[in-house]
Amino acid sequence: MDRGTRIAHGCTIVHNRDTRRSLVLDPGLDKLQAFLLEMVSGDELSLDGAMHVSGLSRTVCAQVLETLVRGGFMVRLQHDAYVRRDGSTAPLRPV
Image 1 (tube, one colour):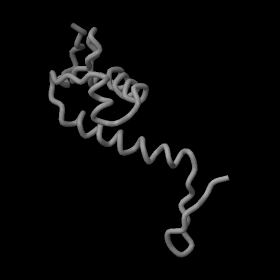
Image 2: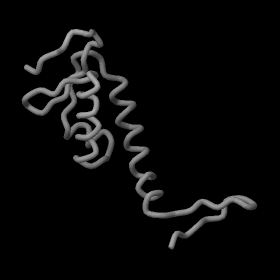
Image 3: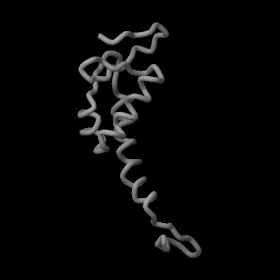
Image 4: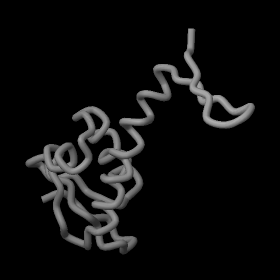
């Protein structure tokens, strides 16, 4: 059963497992997003670095970085570094 917290007349926030998870996940994703947006073409980020910046698990960071690879924003190198692409339409091959 979910427990609620009354915050104003007639308003209740329901606390459940998903809410607790989002309280950890959302700030971590915000931190990682801010870091990634500061990167310029050629900047590298390792999986360990993403975990350090965000405080998120290895699995979550890997999912985020692999999604960026699939979207063409980053490329994954053989030594598990992720490199920010330059935004051109030409494919970038791993080194």
